[in-house]
Length: 520
Ligand SMILES: [Zn+2]
Image 1 (tube, helix red, strand yellow):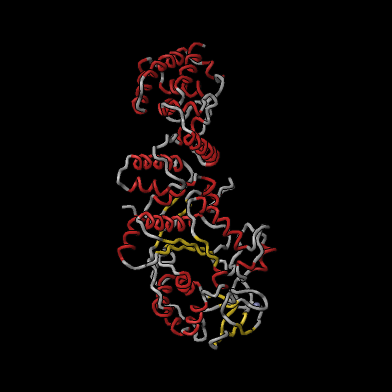
Image 2 (image 1 turned 180 degrees about the vertical axis):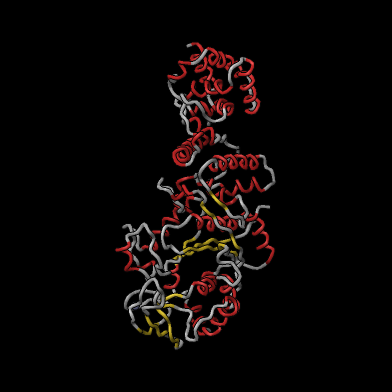
């Protein structure tokens, strides 16, 4: 059974975690890494598995825009942004106009990407959640039981908090920073706080001391405590996280202890998902393709992104290296999983493909032009690509199929430009290359002979052997023979493996070219 369905089954069978409310979250401290997209899609798959099991469920995504800016991304102007260090992300100006804040700007970019990938969670802005007062009850309990929370940190994470530590940070009334303040007292209504110059080493507080209500957005809980209070304030019953948060003594253990011992809220169903790494150095090179979610969005069709995330088990690392044949292989797998879906095989493959779809799924399997072939044919000016695929399909392409082909052409161009191995980037020349006009008698004879092989359907391996045998039979140096093939088509002395290459070309074109060269 597909892992997301297994989760859904387990959740339903437990009789707990009702009403089903799936949640994930992220701090929009800059461009969001593609790894966070795995989090959203993983949660979306579980949410959809619950719906498919006939259950009512909600899916939300918390944008932690109440967090302080604690570092400067290298693509921002340091001079301009340094002054905002320590301030909540929702109070910092956006790098581009049209957005209420820095937090909103980066969050909206990411939301657009995951919406595109078929994930439509209800968006919850942490700043608004605090301002709404929904966190107030939890904040009060945490401040009242500060000593108990210190003991939890000590017991669970071996983290010693000083006796005067409170689980809360206020937004300084004077300088607007949240990352620099320390609460030093709580009288049941207001907290006393100091804005310290040396609380953290990445920004200095202004030295102000004050007294303020901790409610309605005036400050925030430390995130491990906040996580639990958010579960309660929102009503979240299902939330996993990346394995960094799920380690023993880590964030989740603290949050779970807060649930049980401080706020009396059932710990949501949890799981630990693996990371998505971007293996290829190329991904962050000057070619303009980096490792943000947006970069992935520009590199692959959206269904393929879902597929990439859905296919491995949630707890298997994905090391995505877009160079080499990774992308054509991914398309091949995607197409083969589509086959399983339409054959109604009751296996994970079909289910994974189904859950990778974004729009409605056609009743009849559409013809899927092989990505490798698309990448190949768009390099051949002599090939009418629509006609070519109609030939391969053996019928006219439907409107939907033409759209798929158009999409694959778009992504094949991106792949060829940035990631395709050198031997796959080649160009069949429009005219007979100059070197092909200087062929020896033997080379011409060789081409004339192999033309006759094209009246059959070949397996590439067999054809490769045959091409070699023909050279030997004609007493031609096989190296010279193979060079004739590449030179005649591309004006290059070498190319991809000959049989595979030839079988990928338009048959009529190859025959025409070889005859012209041979009779020259
Ligand atoms: Zn201050």
